[in-house]
Each structure stands twice: as C-alpha cells, then as structure tokens.
Length: 290
Length: 299
Image (cartoon, rainbow over all chains, first blue to last red; front, side):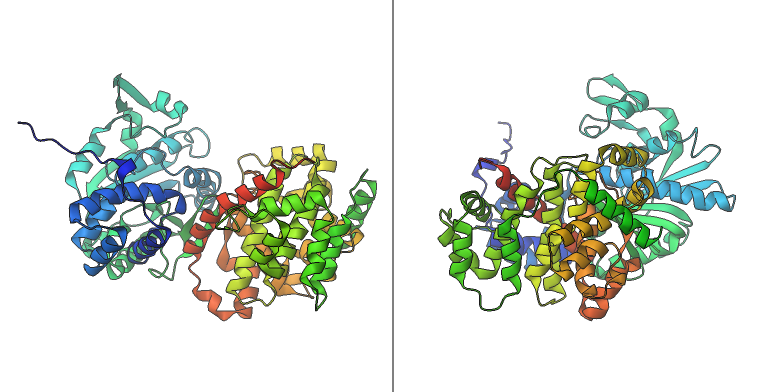
C-alpha cells in the first residue's frame, strides 16, 4: 500500500490568539531579527499547524514554550524558520527595494563613481539560493546598458553554502512559481518558456552573474569579497545567533564601498547587530549605508 | 527663496482662493476646550449631540479598528465612557474637521490626504509617547492638521501642481522643495495663512509653518520635530498621498532626530526597524478609519 501524505487542513488549523501571536512574533524578532506583520498572522497560523502536529504540542502557547526551551539556533527553531521562509525566493521579490535602487541608489553611485572615472559596478547576492535575486539585478542593469551604464563593467556575484542551489542558479531554468512576480516586459524579453511552466533565462542575463560556494562564517574567504557597491543578504542572517550575525555583518560592512548600500530582507532588522551602519529609509523599506 | 517673499506669495494666493471654507464652529469650540482647564464631560457631549452628522461620525469612528471596542458602540454617551475625556475631544475635532475639505479633491485626493493626515496624527502621538512629551493629544491633533496647506494648494492650483508632479517622474523628491520651485511658495506658508485665518492657536500655527524645518521653531521645537519625523515615517510607510510623494531620508542626518534625542536621550536606543514594521501594522487601521469617516453618512 502506498504511503499517504497527509495534507494540512488549513481550515482546521488551531486559531492563534492575539497574545500567542504577539509572543511568538516577539520571540522570532528577538532571536532572528525578522518581523511578522499582523497581516501575516494567518500565514503563520497555517505554517505553525505543521509544527504543532510534528512536535505534538497541543496549543500555540505550548509550542512557544517548546521552541523557547531549545537553545538559540536549535533544531526546532530552524524548522520553524524553514516553514515561514520557504518559497520566499522569486524574481522581483522586493519591488519597493528595486524601485528605490533604480530611482535613487544606482544613479547616485553611478554619479559618484563617474566623477573619479571608475566605471565598474560590483554587486553581491549573499545567500543567493537558486539565483533569482542576482539575475533580477542583472536584468535591471541590462536595461540601463544603453544610457546610465553605457561602457560600464558589471559584476554580479552570487554565493551560497548549498552546492545544489548553486548548480540550479548556474543552470538558469525556473518554474512558474519563481517568475510569479516578474513583470511581463522582463518575462518576455529575458525568458523563454520552453515548455509550459519551464522558463529558461536568456544567455545575456546569465553572462552577467557568477555563482560560487561560500560559507559566510568563513572569515578567510570573507576577506576576499572586496569592494561591493551593493550587497544583498535576504533571509539568511535570521538563521544566525547574535554573535555570528554581528561578525558576518561586520564583514559586509568592510566589504562595502564607502558609498555602497547593504540590503536585507523585507521584514528583517539589523537592530542590535551592528551600530556602524546608518539606516536610510525609502518608500516601503530601508537600506543601510556607511 | 526669501521667507518673507514666500509668505507674501502665500498670502496673496490664499486671498485669491474662491470659496475658501471657513472652519466649522464646532472645531473652533473643541480647540478652545483643549486648553481650558476644568471642562466638564457633559459640555463635550452636548456639543457633539447638537450636531447629528458629527454625532454619527463619532460613532462610526469609535467603532473603527483604531479604537478597537470589544462590542459595537451605539451611542455618543457610550463612546464618551469608552474613550474617556481626552480621546473624545480628539475624535470630535477630527470629525468636525472632515467637512472642511469635502469636495476639494485636487491633484491630491481627499482620501489620500486624510490617510496621510491621520497617519501623521497617530504616529505623532506614538512618538510623543515614546519621548514622553507631556501633551500627546496635542501631538495627535497638530499631526492631523499639519498639511492643510497641501489640500488647498493641490485644489486651487491644479495646473501648477500637476506640472510639479510630472516633473518629478522617476526621481526622488520632497514636495516642499518642488512647490517652491513651481509656485513660489509652499504648503507650509499657505497652511499658515489659512490657520491664522481660522484662529488656530500659535503652537498649531508653528507646526503647520515649520513641520519641515523644526530647527527654526521657537515656541515648541519638540512638537515640530515630532510632527516632522511622523511625516517622514508616514511617507516611507505607505501613508504617502497614494505614492505621490517620494522621500528618502537618513534618520541620523535629520535635524528633528537631533532635537528629539536631546529632548529624550533614551530615544537613541529606539529600534527604528521594528518601529517601522509596527507602523506598517497600523496602516490598515488608519485606512479603515478613513473609510469609516466617509462611509454611510449622508453628507
């Protein structure tokens, strides 16, 4: 007899009370630096249903005690984070961030570098997963090739600790879920739908980005990641404890050009992790600079 | 541009506005009541009940998520008991003010104006609480009225205002700077002229005039700084006139931030990121509240 996998019945999922939600939200924020907006309450509720079942906890309050009892970075916490960040990666994920980058930060950096005659742009997607973020940048920059970035050298580097996702990034083939946020213009111009739901990235985009294995904990290798204008690191630091986070962010700080920008994920925070970075606000988000 | 010249332009402009509304009597009375010690609850209740549209609005708003009543509140009296004295004045003031702008949709629509204004009111109050400013209610009210000049400017000077917005396409900008460029004055000066016409108290006038330059304030720089920051935060957290303003800022470089840090040194430890995320959570409440003002009330 074939094994049956039991789907989660979202409707039957235990309702999370405001108090339990706030407690878990604060815990997750304090430990991981990722904030759960109230609008994501039901999302959290349905994702927690799986964890409650797996751990045998009878209520969200019990589960909160359970996950809290483990040390920071405990297995259960990791599983919880996996549940809540899964499927986060896609092209054009963070539109407010991309808008700000296109309208303000990129022209600003281009102007600063043009003044000193240095026409090279370096971008790092740290924790690049299967490459969506790095390639999104590649597409945006390709669009500027004829004007703002005419004759500029562009280097986009994606790094991840997981070799499998690096191989996927290098291959550059994606499913419909990855391209769900991609504006039609970009989808038509830079992807080829070889068969339904199979999107192959165009070679000109792939050419702009390279992908390598890197462990962000590896101090020696981190020292070589020099002189970036933009660093992106979304939903990666949430897995680190505060001390490791501080160390890694310090590397990012050192590896960023004086006028560069460091971006984290949409609901992430560096509060208490690094006091050197300054926060720059823009509509719908913020970034960090020196 | 010279401040005096901008003020002169604003004065001439406001004089030329045809049918500039007068402030409703009830709003003036609420402002009066704000500073008078020993006001009785009944006095406020009577004032609200004397105006049926106002009473209906108060009940609508008190039932909006912003005030979170556990059960529906159906009478002004219950609203008074639920909200307490200070909050009911806030509410009465806001409700009485709604009519002033009715039908004045210009380049900026009134709904976005209210969302921004309420947002700045709510956020001013939150900041006032954080810095332990003694009169959080005043912070809320001045937050609500800080941009009155903007509505009238975008209504009475539609062509220039449209040209101004068109010129900014795809570039970051601060409205106030663009207004000076296109209109020779800004919503600060226009707002001040209107506030003076309406006999607003001096500290309200100061905030309206200087909410983009709190460092120039003399009466209450802290209050101006609170509204200035609330305004900036609203502009980056979705309460930005429907995306028509496009602001970036570095908190460390804002004068308002320095003013507030010297007023309340503990502010330096504020978790700004979390503060922003918490504001995001308030946005739907503010939008609901604005909807509740306009819904189902016969104008």
